[in-house]
Length: 266
Image (cartoon, rainbow, N blue to C red):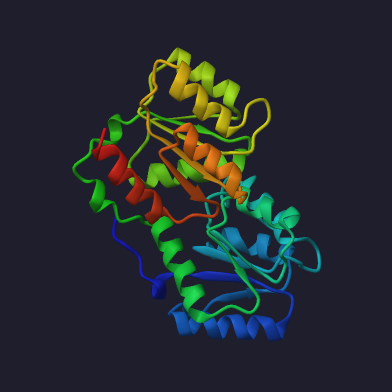
């Protein structure tokens, strides 16, 4: 697949304030994205998406008719919109509101105000998501890699799976918690395991401990993709034997680099 450039991205901005929209559009043009489409509310944005077919949605958190959380959830539940990348620009700092955006597979969360350089990094992360540069993995037989994705959020599972499929990893099984993952590991063999940290029934740390100490696949590479920020929790996960930890949101290049390192060492 031919790699896109920022100038080729068609961006739809969803922002109720005309002043804020003008500022963000100026920043987009400074970063190289030209002629963005502007919508003032979620309903008009959702109505226009199928026809305009944007490559990226950039939204505020609070819209006149819904929140950014509502907008991305509707997108993820609509088949023709589910894979459109999403970036949030907001001054909101409460994780109660931000975490659902992370779980939905947002490319980036940008604060207000933000620097053009930060926006450009988010746009580059969008390009990596849409057309990842898989040259680093060309020597690997990606089609043969069987992957288990564990997360209680369906949106998060689908986001990770989409990134993996874009890289050429097609053999993917999804389950929603650690207990279901153990059943899958007992029934089949996997080459790679992605897991969240915070899950019901059995969390990511408990799953890592089980895999390393009690399963027949103790050496499987385990990548934890999580919004968990408690350093003591993350230290315990590292101690349990996780291979790598990625933040939510994360960019496709970070996963590419991890896979290159982990899979070549298998």
